[in-house]
Image 1 (spheres, rainbow, N blue to C red):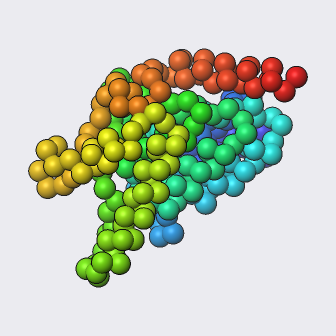
Image 2: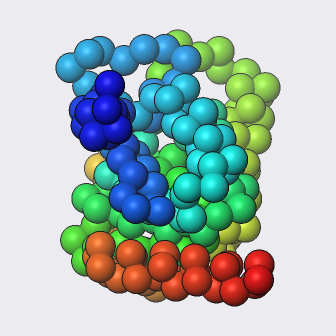
Length: 220
C-alpha cells in the first residue's frame, strides 16, 4: 500500500493524519475505556492513541502535534492516560477545542503546551460520575474523591486555573436542573485560566510553528 493510501486509511479508521512535519491528533466523540462502546457511537479509543503518541515521540519526522478536540468526555482513567502521554511528549503540542471539551476532555485540552478554544467552543466542568450500581459506603465516596483530586491536580498543574475555583464550578448547583456543574463558553474558559486563548485553526497552527522554531533553536 502506498503512502498516500496509508494516510487515507488513517483518516478513515482513526481520524488521524500527518501534515508535513506536524501530526494532527483528533479526540472526538466519547473517550472509550476498557469496555467497547456501540459501533454507532463516535469514539476515541485510547488503545489506538497511546501507541501513536509513543511513535510520535520516537520519530524524527514529526516536529510537533496539533490536538483537535470535540469530545463529550468518557472514561476517566483512559482520558487521563492520554492526557499524561500528551503532557510528557518532548515535542511541542498545541490543542484546539472545536465544539466541546467536556468532563475528562478538560485535562486533554490543558495537557498540551498551549491551548486554544474557538469562540463558540464549550467546556462542562462537573464532578466525577460512575455508571451502574454502587455500594453506598464511605469507601465509595473516598474513591470518588481520589479520582476527582487527580483530575483537579492535573488541570491546575497544566493551566493557570485555581483549584478552589475549579472545584466551585464542579459543585455549582445553579446551572443544571438535575445535575451539578458549570458550562464555560469560549472566552469564559480563558478568563478562568483553563485555556490559553480564544482562537481558531490559523492561530493554533501559527503557535505550534512558533513553539517548534523555539525548540529547534534551543537544540542548536
